[in-house]
Image (tube, rainbow, N blue to C red):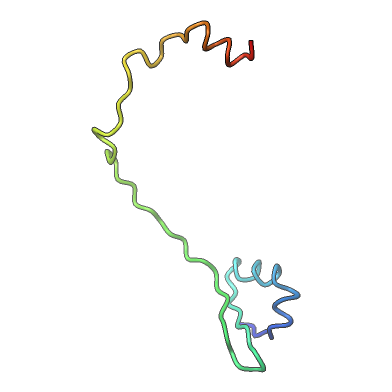
Amino acid sequence: MRTVNIHEAKTQFSRLVDAAASGEEIIIAKAGIPAARLVPMAEVKVARRFGGLKGKVRIAEDFDAPLPDDVIAAFEGR
């Protein structure tokens, strides 16, 4: 654990963030008194729920049918 004063933290913020991201804990002090702690983010693992959109999404029967000529022309800028 490393302690830095506010002035040093402001001038080396990017390096301190990199150090924290790699696992180091950094204490930021004001007038020698600890004021804040810079720590790495904990990884948040989101549990996937299969079938969560069941019944909420509908795919049209002609979803993969060829597009009309006027729509194709609009995409091509004609």
